Amino acid sequence: MPLSRRALLFAGLGAALAPRARADGPTVEGYNAVVLADPGELDVEIPTSRIEGRVPAALVGSTWLLNGPARTRVGDWTMHPFDGHGFVRRLRFTEGGGATLRARFVRTPAFEAEAARGEPVYLGLGSLVAPPTRAGARINRAAPAPRNVANTTIYQWGDRLLAGWEGGWPFALDLDTLETLGPADLGALREGEALLAHTHLDVARGRLVGLSPVLGAQTAITLREWDADGRVVLQRTDAIPGAMMLHDFAVTPRYVALTRNPLRPRIGAFIRALRGRAPLLAALEAADEAPGELLLIPRRVGAPVLRLPLDRPTFTIHYANAFEDADGRVVIDLCAFPTIGFGHEFGYQGPDLPLDPVLAGGPAQALVRLVADPVTGAVTRTDFPYPGGVDFPRVHPAREAAEHRRVYAAVRDQPGASFPFDAVAAFDVTDPARPPQVFRPGGAPDTFVGEPLFAPDPGATEPDRGHLLVPVYRPGATTLLVIDPARLAQGPVAAIPMPSTPYGFHGGWMPA
Ligand SMILES: [Fe+2]
Image (cartoon, rainbow, N blue to C red; front, top):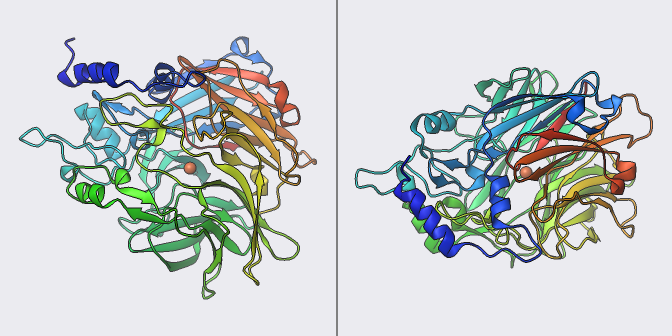
């Protein structure tokens, strides 16, 4: 098959302008092989004979889930990985110690149109893509929008799975077949309204908590809560001065907590984006000269939002958990960046260049505990030291909105670098002076670690009895590691081989 002009351009520019990997960091080829892996939909039996070690009996019948961007190369065009199509992986631990893997694309209108056309059709968040005009130019303004690719989160709510994305409604999937059922309004979302991909459960009250932001000169945030029957039991909307970036938040019995991540437009790029000639993401920058601020949104109507000053700029993408202590103070564990950049996430350089793993690793994020007194407004900050970035923080699933002892996270061992992650760590948040337990899988430099999930043992009385489920990606193969967190540094008790699937974002675990 003859190569297209764009493919030749890709190869030529790739050779001429290839990013230079750090001597001790990932290779460009290995990193691109992992992020851009495209195995298609999968149904795979994984017999015990192929599993290293032994799957713990406690996991049998339970399910590991993961969503993330896939088919990130559309035609001969590399999309920003944020714009890759949702690709849901589900691994079930079967009787006898084996597993079954199913992987399906979330069949959004954007996926269906691009699968049919073989080229980008929908407007990207971080990619400059659009169908060619008659003159051959690609101008974002001409593309259908928004590009809801449902690629960020996957969680069970009621009798279905929801695949979340940042700028629109989640997509519902059949719990068993993973067939896409369509966009879900959850009985409340308005046409064109977004629901943040990250939602949280208030486990004690059986409530789903979600935020819907509208960005502008001020940021309107609608907080909604759904009860176990799917009824909206709380809805309030607040206007916060200034533009801000929202992605995640934390929940306590009385509050939704999040740091204000102030943004401003980069004027030149913003004008180009409005004219369809630059991606939206590249038109934003962090307003990191502004002081940090913690927002506490009361989980009831009437009470005002509390805006508490922080001692330094604090940009948060992901929250581990939050709770209230015996004195009514709000305790929040989060991964804080000093600042954030936009447009080059995952090392994205444009449609014709490979992803650059060095460009992907900006200023590192740290695991941080904020303790906020809603009465006095005082906030103290404690950092949990680690040389590189700490992110994808998770806790015991039954501890959401309640006190937790450990935070599990993916970490980057290289000092100062935020990404890509190459190890998994467990932090004891009751003792900041205690170094975390760390396990770094072999296969450096092209071994990448995804979000660790904690799967508690059924019926366990000790709070942290269970196993960590950690995806590990290498060129040509993905492995799900099963790790005893009490012996984290000793490595996995089981390693489950899977076909190579692209680096994922967020997952979940469902008990048997
Ligand atoms: Fe996220």
